[in-house]
Length: 53
Image (cartoon, rainbow, N blue to C red; front, side, top):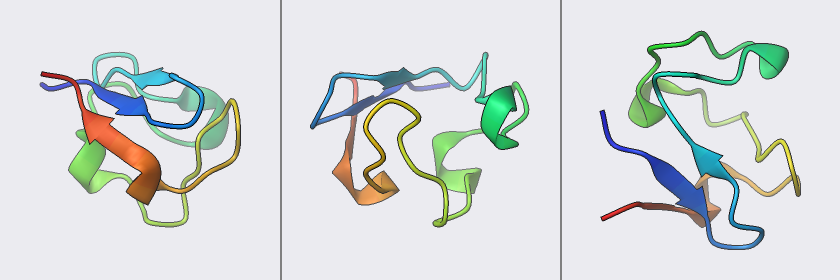
């Protein structure tokens, strides 16, 4: 699965790890995360994330 990076703070979402503290289970693809999810470091929405090439 592809990793995604916050363009504001650089936080990297790794689908293998998920974001369990915020209700996102390990193995959850970025596209499957609800739109209400936000960056755990800086609080911006999913629209600020870019796929890591």
